[in-house]
Image (cartoon, rainbow, N blue to C red):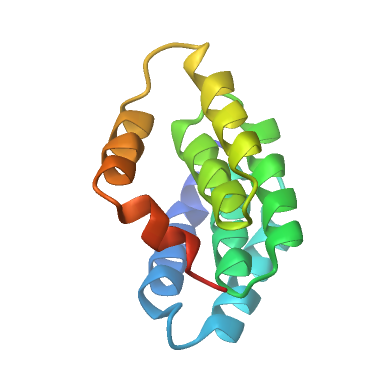
Length: 134
């Protein structure tokens, strides 16, 4: 969150939480909210990650992946950005690219986020994610 000024952090996190909570019912509004945050904070990786998430849920996989890649480029050591890109790629059917992203981050050290992701996969939850937004 270091790319977002302290005075705006609470508002940004609140907007992201609202988008997460209402995305199933109001995808268009969620997209507009996240697009506005991306325009206001173009250097904030977390904003690009969640914008990608919303776009993916709408089936806009190409645009979603672009924002996921921007997030990783802005914060290459961020587990959140990396896992979000993994999920965007996976949802788009780009499984090899998803695993390549996982390997990229793991070269930097152990990742608790990917351990949890792989646990979800082993429990069959990752396959459930693939159907979201399609």
